[in-house]
Structure formats: C-alpha cells, structure tokens
Length: 132
Image (cartoon, rainbow, N blue to C red; front, side, top):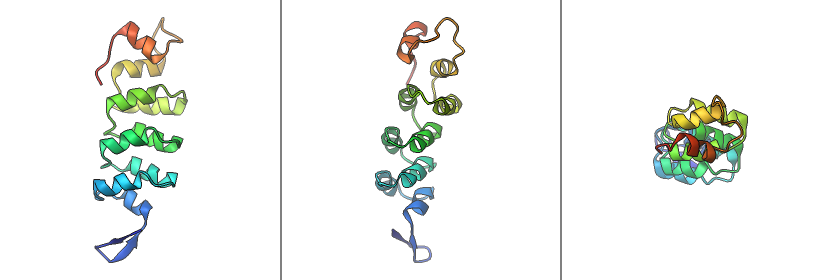
C-alpha cells in the first residue's frame, strides 16, 4: 500500500491498479503482484504501457489475458500470439479488438471457406501475410 497525497490516506494496490492517473512505473510494479486480481486490474487500466500488456499477455490467469485481449492499446503482434489460444471466449474478444489484423479476425471467426481445420500459421500462409 502507498500513501495517497491528495488526502493522506492509504491507497490499496487494487485502487492504484484501477487509477488511470497512476504513473507507468507503479503499473509495471503492480503487474508483477502475486494476486491475479491486481494484475487483472492493471490489464484493464486504460493507461497501462504496451510493455506491461505484452508481459501480462503471458500471464497464467485467463481473466488477465482476456483483459489484455480487450485492451485498446494491445499491439497487433501480441493479439496475433493470443489468437492461437483455443478458448472460444478469448477468440470472440480478439475479433472485437480493432487492433487485431483483419486476416486474423477472419480466421478466428471461422468464416473462411475451404480452410477449415488449418492452424493460424497455415491459414496465413494460404491467404497472405499480415502487418503486425
């Protein structure tokens, strides 16, 4: 816990992780917290730095990964890595993220005729490369 200079009260890690005005340095530290709920809140924070999102994309907790997949600042290359996750709910989230490349969205949506059963890498080899 740390002191909140505005009212001299103690600020919990959860409150800090939710605060969009908390410095990136604090978010980086909170992203390594052993409590998954703190990492989850960091992944939801609109000002979480890209390097932290990339690290959290490899988290062991599904809910943290899902928030990274939803985040507006998660880069395309991280979303492409996450696309290989077989969890259906995560695929839906990736389709909705505007940073997910169109070819990956197509593969995730299973609306590609003649390519059923292909891995993402095989699909991209057939339809062309993507910009990440």
